[in-house]
Image (tube, rainbow, N blue to C red):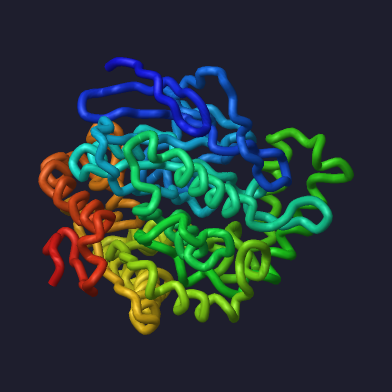
Length: 441
């Protein structure tokens, strides 16, 4: 691996060249001040080192670590965390499509910096420039508190990252007029909001939504108000002076205050409709129909998206562990709740998009290791798209014998994703059963 210096509109950066790709890690796209919208990073004449990952938003351990493993281990945390990573084929004069990934984590965990989210294979195989993005989480980015913090700071961070991409990605050989945004879980939920948000016009041309929890998007206003009250009580008279650890305590109090609100409390933090830059709840569908003609989408789920979340309920976990009856009960309940919170809302989204004159590709990912109790669970498609086998080797969802499946199916699945970014599905609707077919039916 060799270091090189690149000149971008934002300044000079040191990047790392590794075979067919170049990597720029931990690039600052904006500055985050507590409880304030992000601000642009000042242009500097200094050489910026982009050879190590940037910090991630402060967060508690992921509740899905028993599914994906310790993906975030070893990364520094800092409130001023607005960094992104670019992996691109070595520039050769061609303008290449760009793919910008938004991570999941229920808006309280995750980052674009872990090695498990490295998109080198996508870049090298697909001839695309890839970007993975950090944004503020939890109380730092997604809780409006009267007189203290506005709503949707994390969403505004994502928009700032897309503006940075538009201004700078040409330096990596990317085409700023051919950007595809894609995300998984809360990242896919973010994509759905970016499609209708003010200020995003012209920042992207296509969108992919993986396992978007669209079934818990609406009717959140009363819950958000209760969360804000609970957080404010914990923070006391001078929240600006509170430590980061104190804010995480307040975040936990806010999450506890959300619990009585039922299904929407499964993801208590997140964008708030009716607050800048989002339309009111009752205006969202009209906005979706309006953008449909301009923006092809791909949207889908895994066949057991809900299963890990059901397993977190101690009562259900005991039932799932029963001999003889446990496995069929687990499969049945997973199927029912996955359809309710993920499958049906995603299908409805695709139908609405088509009704607006747009093109929509849908998919279901159904691979899982033999005899896996987690089955084709939430997040299981990620190792087929990003990272390496070593990066995901400790993920319980994959089991010990998954390498042949990753080696065989990973390149074929990545091909579908980058072909979508290249515009190969723009004129067609299709349904994919992944990895059963790995091709349009």
